[in-house]
Length: 170
Image (cartoon, rainbow, N blue to C red; front, side, top):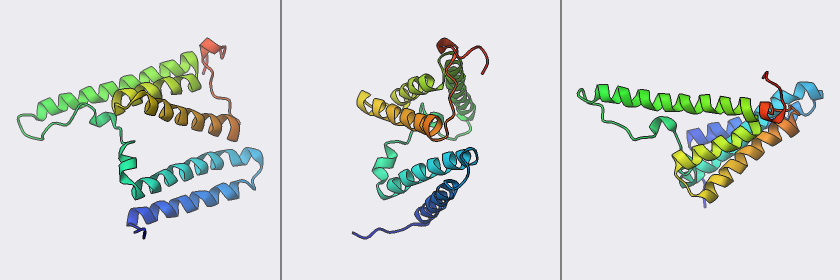
């Protein structure tokens, strides 16, 4: 089977190669100096590989396509529906802002790790409309990625929330 390289696939592969080089060079830095390049480089390599897989298998990538701005359907762009379209867009924007405010409130109360798990699960169940198995797997994957990158790789203790004794300040 022959793989055809499109322009975007070539660019993504180049980006993954460049980010991988940054990761390897960052390993030679002192521990404090390597944290940011490792975090950015490893995340870029992981997401780039996911994108390359998605370009090879588009159906797999389309399963992960969730956008809050597209939630609720789209309206036709006609003169008579333009005002209704503006209201619908404003409604979707307010919903998105509500999710963000809720997330920040949860982070303050229970900390990043718990808030990430709760909100990713709620988001995937609400907008991707997938089964519980897929929702829990995506949530676990995101949580493990965040935990490994911050707590283990760059050794930054994420805010634990006032409920778990982190104190009132962020």
